Length: 148
Image (cartoon, rainbow, N blue to C red):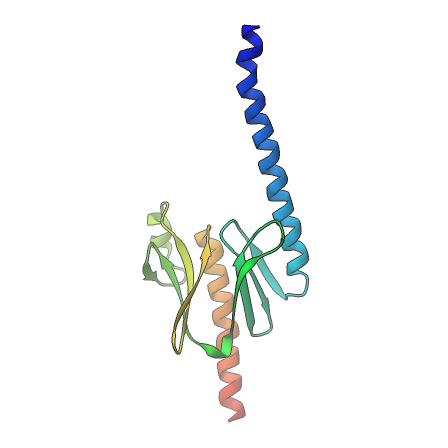
């Protein structure tokens, strides 16, 4: 009987792990369906992000798909920065990656009337997205200048 009582907490932990795995699987499947129409997309525990042309959409991932969706077009963006622990750093700054630790990482889009931040869990992924968006933004800006 004592052996049974010793195994009972382990059974509880196993059941919780199975539920957590199923929950994450449901989030990934909802994200996969949500991300189909986008040209580029990313998923992590903090945010699901999709880009279609010059439009960006992101929100918090759930089992029913991303919620609290926010969107912006690259034509509204004035600057793209990376924030590490609340401080702006340069894209591709390798010294910041060494110092990162457990600080919050976000890609900041500076707009005419404020700023929007897209959270990331991985600094390298945030830098890649920042470079990608900066290239698209610069292409859009040079295209706007050429059309005027």
